[in-house]
Length: 291
Image (cartoon, rainbow, N blue to C red):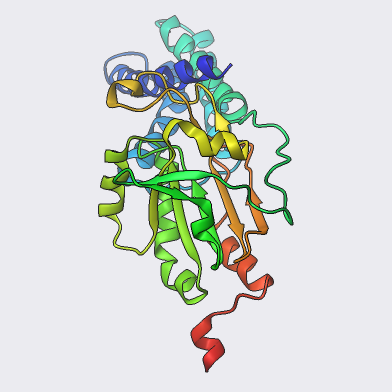
């Protein structure tokens, strides 16, 4: 199933870009109403991906993206109405609108859903299992090294994932608050070490940027995503297998206080959630506590 999803997403984004440009061109030189409808089904989701990849400020969305759905439905109705209305209507516009609406539904309801199932390992109150990661330079590090401090552990899919990068930027913006609560922040991904080094150089924050070669830690924690990489990214050195986006907060003794095991890769916790968890478990700002 994930192999099919990997092919879908690698085809969906280029389709949106090409169909949007083609539709806009036809609005200028051809029948306007049918192609206006086609553009409404493809351009808004195309702009969503442009914003995610280029601007990089999209860390989460709603589960079903109702705004885009409504616009696409209006687009389909507009294209169908223009096609039926009469002379000169091109069937290509209606076909584009049908594909645009259908693929948006598939993306929102099928592709975005993560079939991760029940996780009996990362339950609140249980001890975080032992696992091994590597530093950006390849040095092995055991999870026991994280004991003694509260831990915020974020598993992300890789530098290729724009929502993951936006989420990391949010956490980096919180680093002072996290530091004041004595929190150790660990970011882990199965991506090649060179990509993790680039990410660490990009953020001037005292976090641990670590690598999970072969997804060994992900498998140990039950968050392994076999065949989860979008098709074609293997040429950049990424492995076909990846990890489900996951955030774990544990106390200094390794007890799990919080685990976000989202079942939709676009639905992720707000950054304020992490601070709320820490405060709820008696980890106030140390500077304020001294005062």
